[in-house]
Structure formats: structure tokens, C-alpha cells
Image (cartoon, rainbow, N blue to C red):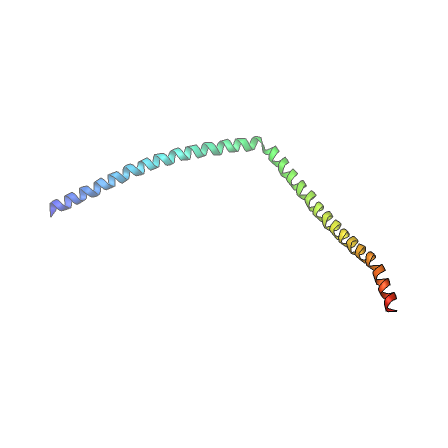
Length: 107
């Protein structure tokens, strides 16, 4: 029985040592990834600090373009209404002679 307990404890110890080695390797990999991500973050920060004016100018241009688009959409809506009205007037104008002839026939 004692031999079984000793062998069982050795097996558990071997498994724990294997897990410690794998966790140590994972820790090293995570340190490398953290270092690389910190470098990327620093480089992006420097890049955006240098180009902040360009970004602000681009945002202002986008806002102005949106304003132009809104006014353009309003102008198109007005033009569509005018064209629909003209089309209706055109139809009525060409049907007036037909209505007069119909009235003459009825009278």
C-alpha cells in the first residue's frame, strides 16, 4: 500500500512538473506578446501625434461633406416635387381639349 501511495505521488509530481514547464513557456510567450503590443501602441501613439492635424482636417472635411449632402438631398426633394407638379399640369393641359369636346357632345 505504501508503495502505491509513493508511486501515485511521483506520478502527480511528474504531472505537476510538466504543467509548471508548460505554464513557464506560456508566461514567456505572453511576455513577448506584451512587449510587442506595447511597442505597437507606442508607435501608433507617435504616428497619431504627428498626424493629429491631418485627422482633424479630415474630420472637418467629412462634416462639411455631410452638410453639403443634406442640402443636396433637400434640393433634390424640392426638384422632384416641382417636376411632379409640372407633369400633373401637363396632363391636365392636354386633357382640357378632350373635356371640351366631351361637353359639346353632351350638350
